[in-house]
Length: 291
Ligand SMILES: Nc1nc2c(ncn2[C@@H]2O[C@H](COP(=O)(O)OP(=O)(O)OP(=O)(O)O)[C@@H](O)[C@H]2O)c(=O)[nH]1
Ligand SMILES: [Mg+2]
Image 1: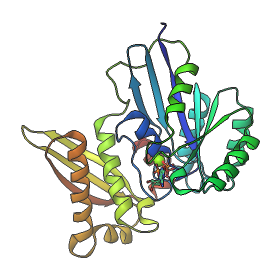
Image 2 (image 1 turned 180 degrees about the vertical axis):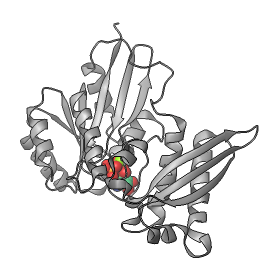
Image 3 (image 1 turned 90 degrees about the horizontal axis):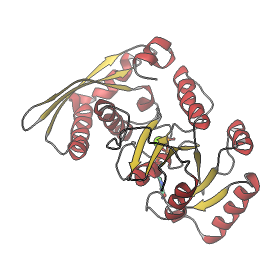
Image 4 (image 1 turned 120 degrees about the vertical axis):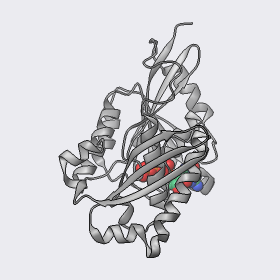
């Protein structure tokens, strides 16, 4: 059998479960997941290899109308994923009533790339709602298959695999067959810290933060990590640190536990907070943060 390989790109509105799906498909917790929208900010690759195929999944930020330069750059990741896909997995959920980005919907209607509509979170819906939503999406995107799934429970994924296996083009692999992703470990460390920031602070604070891993030193029985949390204003710095440093200590503990699970080694982590004014609007800073 000829070797098959290609890009399967996951797109959709914020918070519909794209990252949860990607992690389920890849079988590793590569993309961070939180209950807040706009969690994912990059295009994150997860690669599934076997002898006769290589599937390159991409998780992307939720589609939105940009308020910051950061958002514009995030939408750049989505646009690239729309263009270079061999298969598009368009994720929606049973709660999404109207896709608030008409342009994306229009592109999906016109594209010659095969699109699967994945109706997620069916573990929370009833039969009536499900049928209504399936009919809605069949009407909106008549050329696409609509599959009901629960990314959280790993339910309904088999038809996705079948579709990918039959649709993936014949091609040599794009990446080394040992690779799981194209991003360095430091990226995932900073993302895990960001996940804990999203879980710890309320409202706008997590959105104003950026995490950079300054050093990652592997010793015989421990990994020592130093990272900086950037915020936009001095007042935010105080909130991140918290009364007597309690909040940032909490983030440190939670991140350490998560990173230890990921790298299967004992971790020591030191977090610092720095103000970098308006980094979300500054081209040069965004570039230095990898956006
Ligand atoms: N009940 C239920 N919850 C789900 C399911 N899939 C994801 N979730 C939850 O939905 C929330 C958002 O999940 P994510 O995977 O971060 O969503 P996302 O689309 O990547 O979000 P952004 O990166 O912000 O665009 C989390 O609280 C998940 O636990 C599902 O199948 N069922
Ligand atoms: Mg995400």
